Length: 351
Image (tube, rainbow, N blue to C red):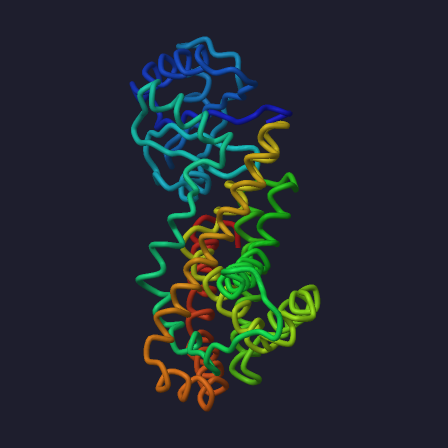
């Protein structure tokens, strides 16, 4: 992209008449966009030849690069598949918008502007998970003890705030690798391969949870957060409870990563690389993602505690068993998604 804010990609089958429409919409969208944009055309299809790329250049007299994807590897990695499409690629190298067979310049302009703000990634993904996969975590969210008055007065909402903050830290922890990789220049194929590291990390966390009740990472982070709090809070709320909030945030973060693996890479990383204003937007998105995920964990805690004494009874005597069970339940899921990703990489010729 050579320092451009984003890239527009025209994906075309050989001899497609959509090429003229793409050019027209590109010109109109670029006229209304204030920023540096790179443009690329990719001719796809098993029957695509170098002569098709040359014919495209001669027909439309374009000055930007025109590439040939005769193997189909590039097209197979796209959300639109092997078909004419218009793509918007952000600074992290990820597709932030895809439309097939084309896209009106007004919608394209909106997609380009949205790319600077993190693309289509929104915190609502966590809210959708709250009433789906996250219900699996209700047993982990059971309280061990009832509410007790602290020795010294604490600000109103301290308990809820601590749950949100600890859970948000857990979410940020599991998304940290993908966020850091967003700042490293590499192609999409390598990025998909590096995702295997995250899948392996998920399996490691699940296995360790099955053996000891919680991953080492969440316990360490929970202990660190607990030590950073005032003494009156430490005496009031046990380290184990705060570590459990972190663990809940870790699993919520993983569930969201499986659904939207580019959430932090695009919503935070790509936005921060778009300029000074983008740094503020990226940081704001990161805080918002962690906060909403923390709200989901808070909701789980509230619902799990509705049973009163019965909830506390199960939480006190079944906490470790529930934690280990969740680990054993997530191990096969981790293996399945990893194998599925390996099959995907093989299908596009990366492995």
